[in-house]
Length: 349
Image (tube, rainbow, N blue to C red; front, side, top):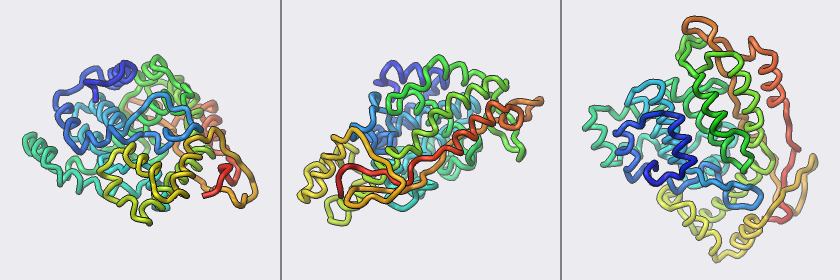
């Protein structure tokens, strides 16, 4: 992280925070955080030709990005570390494992181990003790509204994965660094309708541009090919686990590439050969009717979107959809968008 980061990511990180505090390097270099460098933010979509993810973006990259955003706006070490640690319990294939757990709507089933992983890390606990920080002050980033809050509010976590998704996911290049810098420079801390601090925009025009750009990012995460891919990875991992080829512990100790290697070389040819078809697939199919004798799924998916605040007083913000018809229509277009009921591959599993 950071030391060997590619130039695009370095420039992106420098936009999120002009200064990177020294303490962040130490926490990032711990074993538990470094594990995340080998898990993709893209939830299994890197392993099939259906997607064109040209830039590898890891959970560690995402976590650092969240920490930098929190640091930029708060300069608070505890909040920054809570942001850094928020995905420390992420297993290989990230939200695919939520799909495996039946949690494809909220995608939060893998967060429960966060406290245990931090508590059992001698490196992290040593650093926290040195810095006079208690475990309960960094184990749950939900307690810091700048770091995290409920949909569709704007938080550091939600902002980061929207920015990086717009930059890199599926090579769509919906955002560029210039646009991100323009949007980011207009963000301020405001007080929302609940009297809670929240990131928002100083100007309505910037908030409108933010929503208008990102309305092209949000559909990617509820697309048929995204849901189909994540469920296929989930079912593959489940079969591997049920037959004893991998364990739950493997999902938290092995690199994603090592799990992929186990799948590709699985003695059960139904698993290995079907996975090869998945890797080589370059398209998916959709239907309103259930398709038989094909690998087919019907899922709603989690709708991720943002309705940011706009500064309308000294420190107060108003939702952009309440003062802008343009933004209101953009959000409505996304919320009303639909995919076909079924998505499927041209093979069975």
